[in-house]
Image (cartoon, rainbow, N blue to C red; front, side, top):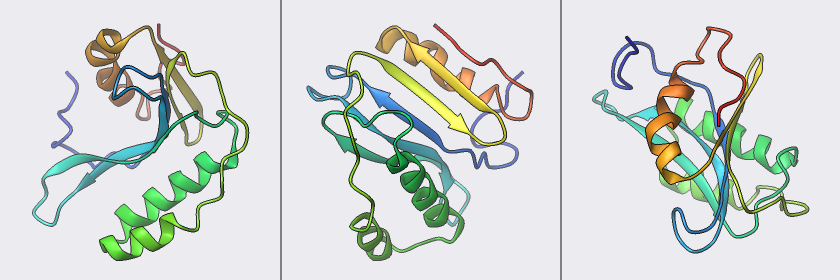
Length: 142
């Protein structure tokens, strides 16, 4: 049985994503998220999200956002430091396709998941992403 997000070790992997418009609002969005926890141990997903046409998956913008997320969570940055650091992110390059829902992680092994729609994401997304930690994992879904 898989652990709940609030049990066991805090998962430090950063998931980059592209989500088509109509899911979290009219516009597509892109960014990165990872699990975080507050000072009393409650866990929650922490995300940096950009609205509008998403950059291509290989754009350096995703790595910059992932690095910013890691530093913010691992070093308990204050909101002011995060806000200042967001201003220094590189501008993303060319736009990617905006008709998909894709999540990928780039730790030691690239893991990529695609989802058909919001129902597929809701039903299979988090369990699939949690299930790949250290197990060699599924490389694609959907």
